[in-house]
Amino acid sequence: MDSSGGGTPSPEGLVQRCAALDWRRPLPGHDGHPAARPVVALGKFDALHRGHMALAAAAASLGGSPLLLSFSGMAEVLGWPQRLPLVPPCDRSRVLNLWARELGLSPCSGKEQQPGPSAAADRAVRQRYIPFAAIRSLSPEAFVALLARDLGAAGVVAGVNYRFGYKAAGDVEALQRLAAEAGMPCRAVELVAACGAGSDGGGADAPVSSSRIRELLAAGSVGEVAALLGRPYRLVAAVKLGPGMGPQRRAEPGGSEASGSCDSGVGSGSFDGVGESSSSCGAPAGGVTSSMDGSESEAVPLLLRDGGAAALVAPEGLLNAAPGAGRYSAALMVHAGAGPADELLLLEAACDSQAAGEGDGSGCSAATCWPRPGVEVVLGRDGLLLPSAPLLRALAAAGEGASGGRALVVLDLERRLGGA
Image 1 (tube, one colour):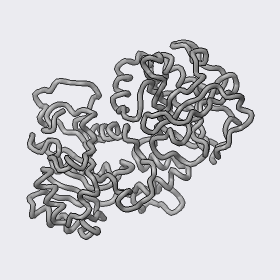
Image 2: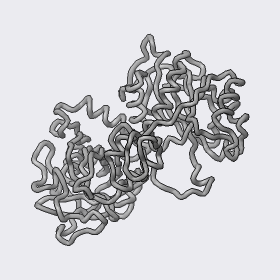
Image 3: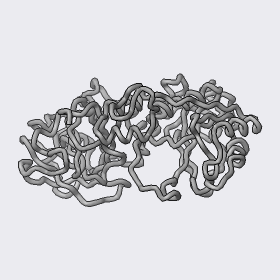
Image 4: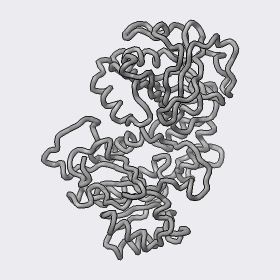
């Protein structure tokens, strides 16, 4: 999709990360059909939660296409500690696409399409990151002028507690005044209540926030996290087979998988939930190499149990924040041959169009094991322990030449098991 906003929304264009040299370029759709002109929503958008979706809805109500504007490099500039995001980069376009569907806009199909008669009016939910270092010193007046003049925003929305400009000098009242002077409609959006999610300080009157979601996630309260997000919390890991993972360890495509508990869970005793590997797990059988950026890192062993193998993914293989230590039920997907740079929106669309089964993995495409719910996984200090059979099956189906022995492991967390 080109920068004018014409044509069917493409996954590649839904999330844009600007460099220091091009961050002032106009937003997609700035000179296109009025319904496709960008209405900017301001915020950090770490979790992409229900409150953030309310901002997107408010932007859409102003008649244009919502565009979330956030700032990269804030932690480095402000000296904040580095931490994994709540939504991995490879999954953000999928979430934005879900919002477009819910808001009745123009969701991306994940497939290449030719522009139709109404293409100019296609409306998607997009996000752009601009370098925080480049705008940190702007006054509130200069920042609003940037939105209107350089970026070509057709309107702006923000939460009622939003502050902006150098040293947070501007509040939402200043934003409304300056936007009116620049000829942009502006709307202040009330914070979305958590509706009782959490019993330790978060109640019905507490607003949905990324900080609250991180607190609940650390406590293992994935059901309450899902309520604040409006979708299950998704954990993504990038893995690569290590030495010793020969064909004899791989399930045949379409054939039976490893016996025992490894297809539906890791079995009791294989991991204690606080990071210690149990000596009853058996001997190592090769390894999985985990990676944040696709490069190799130290291989970690597969641990055998009950006649099958469970795969241990080291913490450095996780692409986003993990919940607190414990056992969880999750819907498991494996995308063989994929890495952190691959869009999950595209991978899932390809699987959906190719699968002949009912979504239980029996009819998955050559490179993908489609969701199987109710899989037991364990998180602890040593990383993520999960059944290896679906992972090996997907890699074997894809073939080592096609997959390169690497995969994205996707877990939509359903609930914590055992109440601990």
